[in-house]
Image 1 (spheres, one colour):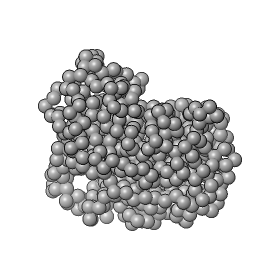
Image 2 (spheres, rainbow, N blue to C red; image 1 turned 45 degrees about the vertical axis):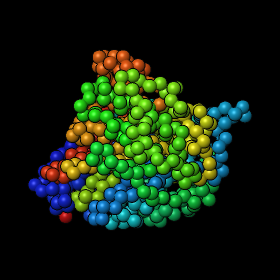
Image 3 (cartoon, rainbow, N blue to C red; image 1 turned 30 degrees about the vertical axis):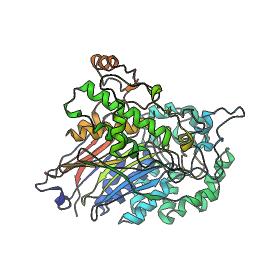
Image 4 (cartoon, helix red, strand yellow; image 1 turned 90 degrees about the vertical axis):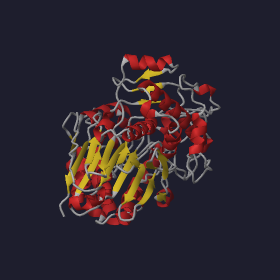
Length: 553
């Protein structure tokens, strides 16, 4: 199924006159979320109000990817003063969490404990993020921006092929929890295409947030129901955990790649740091003049080294000291000197230790004033922990699996962690979410995607294609490849590479793993500063919708 509507509007002046043309663009993973964002813009809202509407709408209509029970990062650019900030709404470990909580009596990691049920859930950040975005950066009342999501929750949304696939994947877990099964399944089975998923309890929770702000979720009746349900089913949340949750504003990671300004997210997301680690290596090579195999070889080797440093250095910067040199060009040059132009490195030979997800969601927005948002949100595994707290409609995340439960042991996405990302009370787990801006004198792009550990490599490839001058539609549709240090293989997207291209990489010593299907759901907006033309594209692999519209005053 594909909805790729990249409506292109032309203005006759430079990007500085964008506000006068009244154009805006939104790309999201679901048509109803895109519709919600434009409804808010048409009512006089800005990109930040639209981001509230889209975030809440996705929480309703894309429950496998994000929700009020999850977290995420919003990267903002405010046009009037060129102010850029990262809004950290990442989940937080409960106060009773401890480093060995997912180890059995033999000291072995029990994957099911950090993946299914409320013990796997961190304290959600999305509700606080909605309130923060609206109150600090929006111009409309929170109640107005949440209204489309409330309507979707009350009236229901239609089951799609994508919903069926992910509900089928997590059916057994959803069946374990009666409230989740009641909402997301049909008598224990995957619902039929076109049938409606209605969530009146979730609508009530959204209304409580609209009326009471943060207290509508983290205190009062909703909080009581959340804590009671979690504790009754083996979880460790307390009222103090909910009360203590706070949004954190952070300075984004920034850097330069061949004259292109990169702005991305900071820790606890590893996205910005790992992107700059890779780009600073690649800046030492002439990618534009290289043949395709040579280019891919260099990119893979840069990924290998960047993901290695992710595994050994990165975690929540509020809890650990992160080396300051990681994003410097000098360090990138040093890493690149160990890359052989003709032969693959061995990850085992690096003085190094770290593998890929399917879900999460991303959206990109630019409004008629030039404000922009790149946001990546998640509940981790499809349908998160599979647990819904009765009476709230809130599907809880399983982001605790993103911590390192035991050093050297892989999580559900194959990522092997270390002490820097160990479980601690009130700590935020390391993430790969990478909402990013890139711009030069001619163009700017808003980009991001879901995909677990493959998020960073997908965004990296998108940035390189942008530098090459590719269109938004070309960038989201391009074939993808990935390397993350361990396992020591290049993951190639299904049907994206010819036998000759695969053989050329193997001849350089690369081990190849062809994926069983295509991956990612990239959402991208590009503005041409010279012509004023805006493009928006939604990944053809997904079911999203990208549009550029005229917003009438």
